Image 1 (cartoon, rainbow, N blue to C red):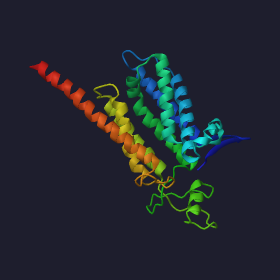
Image 2 (image 1 turned 180 degrees about the horizontal axis):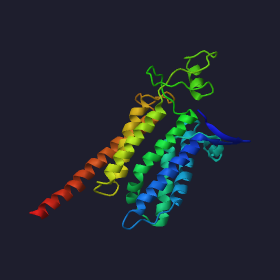
Image 3 (image 1 turned 120 degrees about the vertical axis):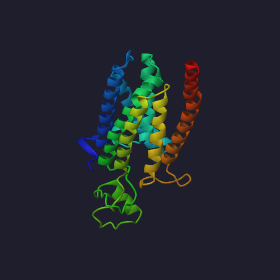
Image 4 (image 1 turned 180 degrees about the vertical axis):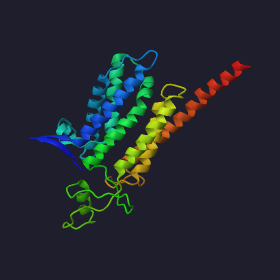
Length: 274
């Protein structure tokens, strides 16, 4: 675990930010390469990554402040060096940033989102490695052989002391689920599934919708092993509720679009063949 890579005065370069930026760089580079293979590539450059990164950092920090400190502390968003980021906020902010860039370039959002969705999952997987090195998003107690023990200066240790699971004389926290790595594994699988869907897509927005459905399902599963979040609503964490909502809504849209678009196209093709 190494949450801070470089520290100069009050400035700290967090490993979470480094892996988030690395994931964005890899994702954007591969998406741009995929775009270049189109018969008529869209007018998109590497600047889309800058817009996405800025929107993602603002959104991730804002979400963290609102969830853990309250909306009255939102002014602290200008203290970007202080850390504190949440994926769902980063995702929303990143999508808004990319949407603004595409709008500026007069590029249709849904076709471009279909190109980028698989690489969004891959970039997110790289970013989750940053969660592991940062020591955040930790899991619940784990008695399995793959359970991991974090160091004394981690948030896990403080949490276990607060929950009276450890004595203050203990040198290490208890073994926990490596939920960050669970998510890395799930996102890599989602990446390959989205690539398959992209090569067989029937309408614009299909791959993007499947991203919400697949990632929402995996995040809902992964949250069952999280130990850092309170469960306020129906025994679920806030992120779990959002993930379930995203999965269900996108799943319903996928079903109806299949019925009204894909099935209709298949029916029309069959009628023309007679």
